[in-house]
Length: 576
Ligand code: ATP
Ligand code: MG
Image (cartoon, rainbow, N blue to C red; front, side, top):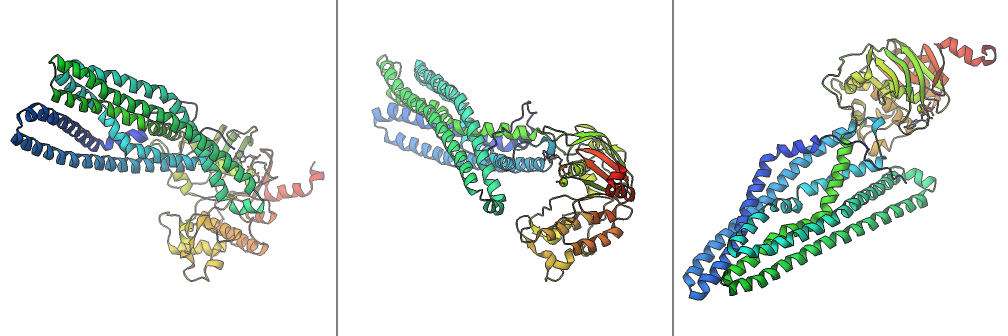
């Protein structure tokens, strides 16, 4: 099971993805702060009410004053209620806004992550995106309220001091105890939050793998293996969550005890102060109420500490993820309006991240506009890797990949790919209609163009007969279509809009001979004067190309006009 952490070693940059959306909601947070201020002031009013009643009303039996005071208190309570509701509402609103913006930014980042910088499995990335939820929970929740209440502890202490003088020392002594307990448990909680999260990600990793490959899992009888992994992941997750809760409980209990101690201490000290006539009974009552209030926000924080550390861990993970290199275009990058189709590899060496060996070694290659190149080679020789590099999916470890004479790194890949049609070895479709899958939201592609490529690739042969065939919804990555059908849709997707560069990786691997033959005949016309790279094991596809490369162990072994190369390959002895 992968235990690789998603956190890279280097320090992440400033968290603009979180700070900016939060700043955008500044005014809402200001309202939250204002509401908190008023709520805390109202809280003082209740204590002062008790003091006045004990000191003035009870000794004099002043019922009229009691009625007046109580009416005043009721009014305050009504406002208090309204403000509390508003505060919760504002926190939720701001939370939802921040969540939306942060979610959008992280998703954009996810889609533009550079494949060579990607860390963690699909499942772990899925889990990471879900961790955003715990951040969200944090931003729109009781935690926020508790944190906002902390500064008002000082106001409460001031008032206690004003009424009870030295009595204020009792809660002041309690505060370091609660804070100390929090600080002591914090490192453990923080560490546990990290491991809870990592175990959670492992769980999600097993889950995604199992669901994604259910058919294969059954066929190869991998269920027991996956079951075992799931059990391990669940056990370790449950184990660390349990410890996390245990440690968190400690902090909470210390806070609760401190609150009671503060109450009792105030009463005890207060009695002496009353005896010395430094304090009235009402003053004591007010101080004991206020003492509770002074310690209480810290108690809530102790209670929320595990959530806090969880949010912090999530924040760190997401921040690390957000600081990884991405393909997001920078303003100084070239955005070509069209491509000539000149592809150049200069001394390109490439090693997949974490791999022991170079997949491509010192490749030098110039493909002129309009040239059609077939790439041959044994399995694992690096053909697909070469195609991926031409598409800018990976950056070379060494050397340069250039398109139209410009280093791909200086070009905006989104704009480049607009002019490149590619069908990779695996035909992955998206959930949606066949039409959507072919057009993919690209501008300026009408039904006529879609039908043209559908006829060309043979999609029309199996969709054309069905009523509304093109609007047929494909569930779940195109399950419900055969492998060959998926492949023809993937090919249509590559050809639609007549891009000037075409990259095909085994475009006919899922097709029968007859379909392949028809397709090749149609493609011969379609691909004339485009720059084409076709990776293939099938000799028949070589009809489409005029130049052939043979890749061997990541190097170009043979390169030449098609017929020459084929002659050499079929007569190896004489060539040698
Ligand atoms: P095939 O004919 O089987 O498709 P190929 O020539 O296309 O083979 P590549 O996919 O280019 O082979 O792989 C070249 C080498 O790079 C292989 O040794 C493979 O193990 C390695 N490789 C491919 N993809 C990755 C990856 N994502 N991460 C790490 N190594 C990879
Ligand atoms: Mg391949």
